[in-house]
Length: 351
Image (tube, rainbow, N blue to C red; front, side):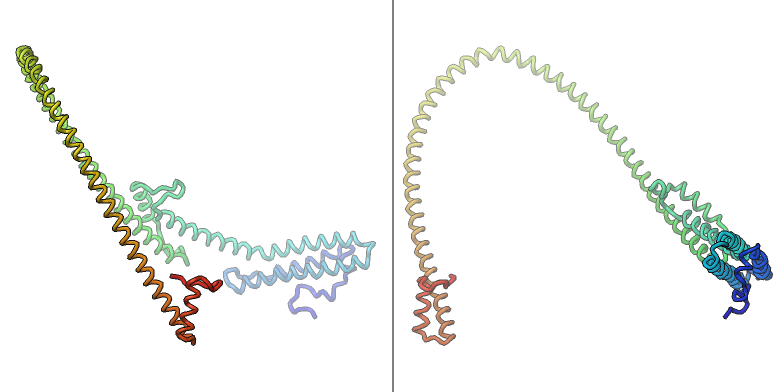
């Protein structure tokens, strides 16, 4: 059953008449006339839906007629070329009609796409002007660049011509202005602090330079005074030295003789003291050895006693476990004794 309001009734189409002797052309013109007879309003959804429906019907008619032609070629091989040419003509013409019918809708959709793209580009421009980092150079903007972007952003006009993106653009612009103002203020404050620190550093460096030059001048003057005083002292000392040299030579000879006697006496005394110290050291070493030996023997005895007490405690605990497990005290004691002596294979007591 054919759908109502079809462009043509497929059941009534005679394939042989349509696809031979140029019979397809009148049918194409009929489709064109019916499809283009309406001029829907593209500003309404109903109008756009109607255009979409008419274009779909043209495409559906093309498919149906193409099917008739295809069926005819299967039954009529001799007319295959003629039918295929007619089918090709029909497809091309109906595609053209479909495109012509849909042209107003396509034009509207393109305009809408361009309009939305323009609104998106307008919004993206606001966002781009709000950035504090130059993404192309991967570095922060300078104050001058930020102020230039701020001026551009403040000059951007946001009104109802932006339609559904108006509120987004208003918010983005407000956020961008606040962000740029805050960033500019932060950078200016930081640069001011840096300038003040640099000025302080320069001032301190200048003060240090002046102080250093003053010290150098004072040191040079002091050095000159010291060298002059040293020269005078040196001259006096050289004179005194020559005068005293003879006296020193005599005194030195006497002193050497005296020191030789003292040294001989000291060496004899040191030898005696050294022998005494060595003797005393030997006595103390032997005493220390005896004390250490005595201490070792005492420690070994204490260790043995402690070990015996520890083993006895462990053995008593083990024996008590056997008693708690049902053995008599005598049997438990015997078992623990055998284990302690290592006479029970695969069993031992850990102390």
